[in-house]
Amino acid sequence: MTRSSVTFMEFKSSTVLSIRMTVTGDTLLKDSYGRTIRDLRVSLTDRCNFRCFYCLPHGEPPIAPKEQMLTYEEIERACEIFVSLGIEKIRLTGGEPMLRRDIETIIEKLAKLKGSGLLDLALTTNGYFLPERAQSLKDAGLDRVTISLDSLKRDVFKRMTGVDVLDKVLAGINAAKKAGLEPIKINAVIVRGHNEDEVADFAAFAREHGVKMRYIEFMPLDSGHDWSRTDVVSGKEIRERIGQRFPLTKIDIARGSDTSSRYRFADGAPGEIGIIAPVTEAFCGACSRIRLTADGQIRTCLFSTVEHSLRDVIRSGVSRDEVVDYIRSVVMKKEPRHFINDPGFVTPSRTMSFIGG
Ligand code: SAM
Image 1: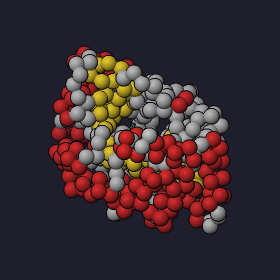
Image 2: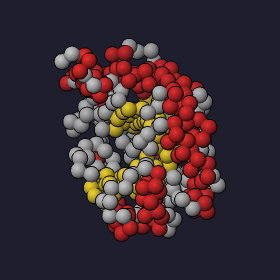
Image 3: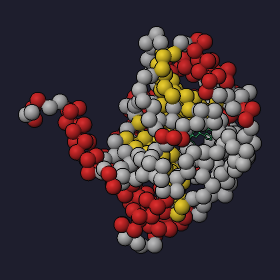
Image 4: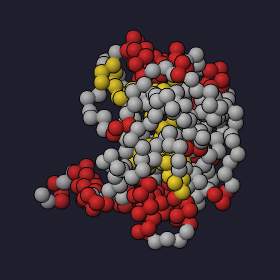
């Protein structure tokens, strides 16, 4: 095949293929259950400017001192090593990651890893800063954003998030669209007695704006430890509520390690539905995720009760090979599944805002 007959997409995928071929077999990060780790979530900060009642009902617990937080250079170094071990997706999160000063700087550094096998660089945000900053994130090399939006009603949004800024978040979604940070995903945590009556309205929003709406079951990761099973609106109920207004068709692709089961609108309308049901329909068997907290702890599961200090290893001045060995040994300890539904379940001491959702 002459170069001129190769389309850009063919060229791009063959480049990716050749990069991936260098990260195969022994090089890949595998856990003791044979799962390959492809997806890294990096928390940039524990701080948040929202007070979502399902996450930080009593405000922020004491924040780690600055010297315990990973610097941008340390994050870059860790991510470079993770990508050399086969990580294909990096999602920046928090806390509210956009509270970290000059987030564009770290995005720019991480975007360079796309030449080494990184395929996808994403950000999860509450959307508050997007009206002014969406374009600079895109210019720095960010591929796409996921934006949290728990209600389309001003009073409910305020009650759920603790802040009266629905308009700003909606403007943030528009700014992200304009900047091309697509496909845009919208996250809504559905909690009984708060927003389950809006489930179909969110689907209407997805259709109108051509975004991927993701409904998340309420998980026991709130700082108040107030979670109760009766507050959980199940994935099944969410599907039924949407289906009553907008018939859905399951997207017929292997789910793989995707957290959501995905649907399109049967009438062909734009937008997509994803249902993330870790409580009632656990999907741990194909989990490919690992997390790095803002203070440099590796967490092998959202619900881990132990953490592993990559920060201390990196700061001890050991060689790159030793850092790699440490990461491999931690990944081997990844839990087979979460234990939310077991009688002896212990809630992790850190909340979602500290773990990095
Ligand atoms: N500040 C950013 C945001 O608002 O998206 C990123 C961090 S936030 C912790 C990431 C995601 O975790 C959000 O979509 C949030 O709704 C979700 N989350 C937080 N606590 C949760 C819980 N107890 N159950 C389910 N999802 C939760």
